[in-house]
Image (cartoon, rainbow, N blue to C red; front, side, top):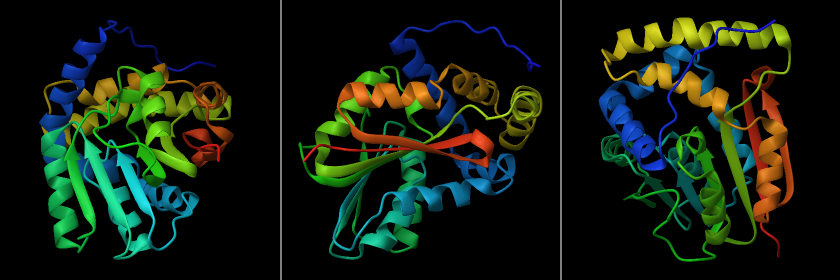
Length: 247
């Protein structure tokens, strides 16, 4: 049993970066609303589980890669307290500005928002206890380089947590999810945000192109992460991948 198929044009890395940024700029003001509508509110649960998995302690330093509107940064700031620090980095200025405003309203004073590229983090080596990314890394042009950068900025024994769409575990769920993501999601997302760029058609396609659970484990291990594992959420629609930097 297989779901709907969609033919797509392969973009060069630079073309992909420009296209992705244009799409996310167009929907920035509707992004949080659409996340809640299209995930039936589940994205809040997935993000809370991500921060629990990061095992943050008071005084830790935390990096949110592809922070977007900073939901994960807000949750992390509550865990690490005033003695710790959170850096939220995203390439898209409108998304990051919304995140900065949310952090200001909700008291995330120990959080620094930086516009920057996940593939070339403008940050020193060995400074973070945890590096987390939520729904970002499937959008980067060079996954290998992005993972290398995450490893570089981690302290020894620091933890990486990747929250990303993945491959549902059952054939029936895969078919239902394909039908929803290729047929309903683009229509609902475009209607709510009045988007004309095709971002809500791009999103399900980007999920299908992204490595499945086991393939991503191998890519993380090849970079140098240790104790790599994953846990499926919502039947494998979402997966949490974790790893550590060697001591």
